[in-house]
Image 1: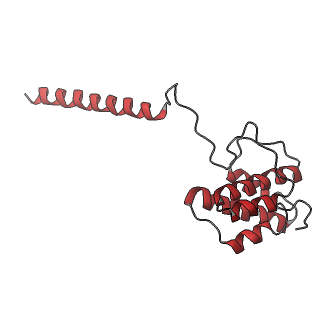
Image 2: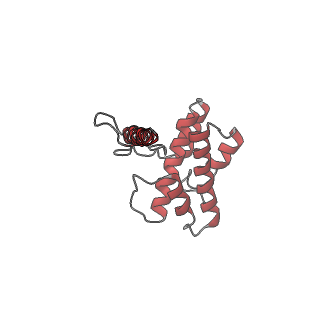
Image 3: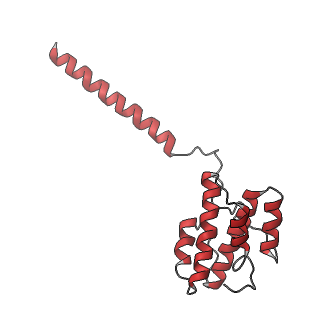
Length: 154
């Protein structure tokens, strides 16, 4: 009788393990009909992004004042990414994350420009992932120089 209970326990354990493995596999392997998730780093249309406005600061400010804060920060982040890539002479990186751009900011020779890029990326991260938006004064500080204003000195 004891042997039978051991066999029954072993069969139950193997069955439970197979069931958990089957459920885990369903979570890890997306179905063929599922769409790929949208990128979370602000570049919503990564294949063919629209060109940046000539005056990034004015366009961002207009979105911000129009209560389209997430779009404003996404535009500012995208502009920061593109101008940092131009400054560092990097090819466009469609799949780059915020962490990648924070690392790239460390490669900028001008410390003030690097700090501006870090501040913009951090503002975008707080807004995108935590829903915490900067106040109007912080936005004005972010828009006060490079990379928001391409001709402005750092």
